[in-house]
Image 1: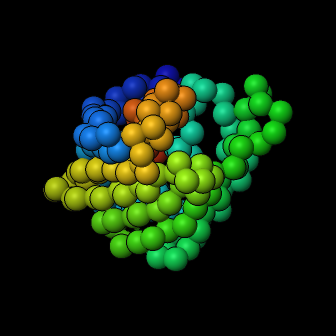
Image 2: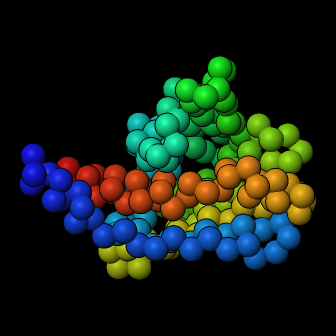
Length: 171
């Protein structure tokens, strides 16, 4: 058991950079230790996605994960949390899916305040540089997202993705 714990702590986590680049744009950049195809799979295969997407520290559970990751497809994620009596659903449409390099989707649960998210993957040797760009419909919508804390768990989820990539590569 101690050997397993040592392996987990030996995972190298790269830094996550989050930057507000304009009134409506939030950009997150991180390099992952793994090929673009594995990073892409982790974003598009429900059985992998649900292993890393929810920050463990917030006590939320992913109840269901439906992903049809193709241009024109949809997604629906449902979460529960002990502090909220009803489950929370997040859903939208995939505007563009280019295997191993680009995913663009809507965040329809927020209505007109919902952002469009673009993830691009660039493979460099045995690493993949990921850029996640959220374009909000207004300055107020981005301000509200930041104030709500909904953008705060990204570093933790990306650390969890790092751990998942290590376990996939080892398996």
